[in-house]
Each structure stands twice: as structure tokens, then as C-alpha cells.
Length: 299
Image (cartoon, rainbow, N blue to C red; front, side, top):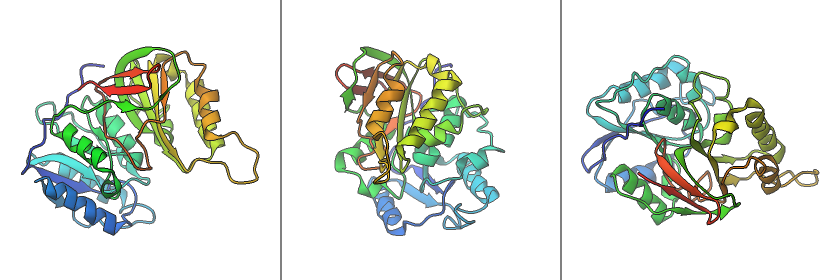
């Protein structure tokens, strides 16, 4: 794809809007604590109306959640959009949503987990976002992870991430981080971006090993992995098999389904649902060193 557009660096005083495009907000104390972190860095934070709305497991109806996104996205004074939490629901609003690429006025979109669908569709529209803690998780991050997030949105460089290299050399490509389950459900849809030259960065939570196996097998059968230059694996939290049930471990599944692809792979990188969740910009150039176990973002 053409060169990605990186939103302008944020600066103290900038207006940032908080939206809930996915699951219903439940973790109110953590939400408030994370808001204070953003405010302490000097940002003007505006929370969308009725952000605590509920429609079953969703943070309101599709129309309500889509309107939150539209209001923030089309607000010329807004410099960034922070997602309240993940859960489920962002793909539902993408059925009727278009980013209407704003090359002259892009803005940051921040989140992870279910927000993967928004981040990947925004990337397909040519604009970078940030795979990062949401407002129900930021307060639980270690200091270095919080600093990393604010360094990235302010346009400052960040340190490489250290993981476990599987061997296979070093590669440079376009970084595309996200949740494995959400990304898998984009396969075969118009929302899936072109994966040519991409370094996939996957994490997940509460998925039994056989389900991770099933998803990775779908990726293999889809044929798209032939375009991918490397794979960076973060945390796979609470992905152990139930006790007393015969199973491969999550580590064995990842090795079994990925190690024969002939591309550099690094695992155990510090991003995902379990703290730390190191922020990763979407669509920027990155280098993955599978001999040294390093992921380095080049922006």
C-alpha cells in the first residue's frame, strides 16, 4: 500500500475525545484512574455523551456507538480518539462506516483488543493508529509502558521491545498489531487490509489452545500468510487448557502452527491483555530480529 499517514504529534492542551465503540463499560474505577493519567499529561479530555449506555453486552446500540465515533472523527478540534474499552462490537459499526480518508487532518485512534477492527480498517484507509492500552487498562500499566504511549503520540522515539527469538534472521516490514481473534474474523471480509510486506503482531486472551490452533490454521488455509514477512507474538493471557483435558500447551500450538512458515518470528513480547501492554503504532516501518528476539519500531 502507499505510505501511511501518521497523525500529527499531540501536545498538551489538545482536545481528545473518549468513545466506547465496543463492549459496555464496567470497570469505572480503572476508567477514572486512567482519565487522570491523560489529564495529568496536560490533555483536554472530553467524554462522549452517555458513554455508559448499554445494549446487552454492547455499549449502546450500533447507531449510538457509531454516532460517538462520527462525532469524534468529524470534530476538527479533536486531535485524538481514546477508546474506553474493548469487548465486542466494533465490527458491527464498521458495516456502515467509512473513514472518508482525511489526509489533511488525520487524528490518533487509540485502543486494542476489539479495537483491532477499527485500527486495521483505518490502516486500510491509509492512516496510522496506535495499538495501546484503553481507558480501563492504562492505570494498570507499569511506568515505562505509560511513558512509551505518551512518547509515541508526542512524536518521540521509543526503545525496542525484547522477546524470545525463534531464529530465521532479520526482516523489515509494515507493522500490523492486533488481537488474533478479532483479526481472524476479518479474513474474507472487505475490512482485511493488504498483508503484503507486513509484520503481523498478535496477542490474545482467554482462548483455549485448540481455539488458537483453529484460528492459526484458518490463517494458513486462507493463503494470506504467504505475503507476511514476519510475526511478532505478544501475550496469550489465560490461554491454558482446562485441567484434566488432554491438550497441547499454548506455546506448543504457536510453535506447531507457525515455526514451519520460513519467516522470522519473535514471541513473548510485552504487549497484550496482561500488563505490560507496550504501545505499537499501526502501519509504520518496523524491524523484527528473530535471532536476537527484538522488535524495533522505526517511526
